[in-house]
Length: 132
Ligand code: CMP
Image 1 (cartoon, helix red, strand yellow):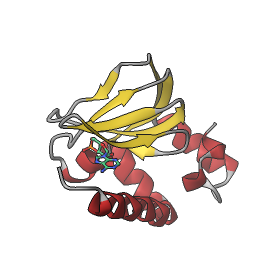
Image 2 (image 1 turned 90 degrees about the horizontal axis):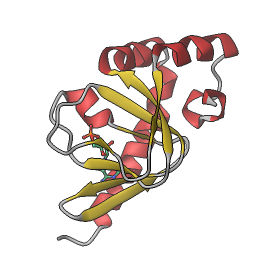
Image 3 (image 1 turned 60 degrees about the horizontal axis):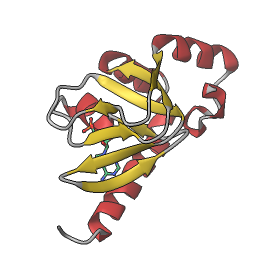
Image 4 (image 1 turned 135 degrees about the horizontal axis):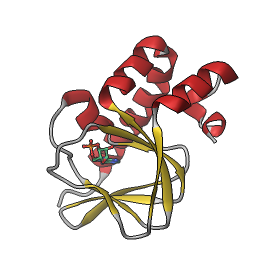
């Protein structure tokens, strides 16, 4: 499943297997809050199946699906979770703890650029969203 994730394109099967083994697969029922705003967070999440919604203050900020990530903000800066992320269908995520996430980017810096591009895309979407 990890082989179909665009961020990992270009990595050898052996490397991909090693990376996959660093994280764990977790399944969530529809309606389950995966990360809660204000909570402490050490997990980076990659959606392998299903859909999740990013919610803050009653607003839906984004809907994320297969191959997309969340939880990177707290993992990067150690601050509390910035939003709720809720499974809106049964969902399966690959979850990596922060120290493994840092190790992954150090060992494979080529993964970072497409992730930064996705973050810039999210920032632009947030800038163009109507102010609440
Ligand atoms: P984190 O703050 O660790 O936990 C909540 C997550 O929601 C956050 O990381 C991001 O991955 C995600 N998130 C927060 N704001 C947005 C947004 N505007 N668009 C998409 N995802 C977001």
